[in-house]
Image (tube, rainbow, N blue to C red; front, side, top):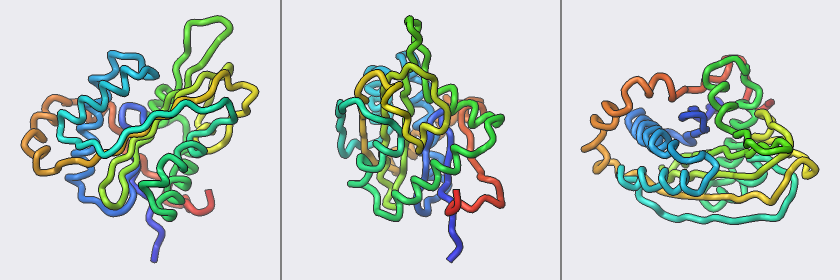
Length: 229
């Protein structure tokens, strides 16, 4: 059976990955509602609890039904998004799906940096704080939709004395440049599809041109072999 790369999007600078087979309508509903949640929540600092709370509240008002939430503060250690995402998502994803997640992050890390999608991701994955000495807050949001349509959003937040690049997706940043223990937030939900259908057109109208400017579909090069990344 041919290997199929999971459908991957950059939504307002954050990564959304669809594992398994899903209808285009379902994917668009997830992406559009998620994008609206991002745009509304951006009045808060993207690294703050207030941003995450606003994001969840907005999506719950758009027929995302919460299944579980969890937040954890961990000890200072070496960091990568994959290092913390895999154990956090292991209760929702199969071993094969976790492998797909690892593969996709490897592909994203190696994509050309001059695309609008990757530029948006690089701009969103961290923020510079106006403090001396210079401190960078790393705060990516990773959203994964499993084959059974469970939506799991995972966020890792920590401060570092050095800016990061896309290597942070799956390569561990040395503990020496990490300034504190990371905070992780996990939220799992599902979309009540029939209920959302009644507001679908209103959401598309509200987003307008943002669907083109803030939503990017990542397409790996045709000759890329995800298994060898």
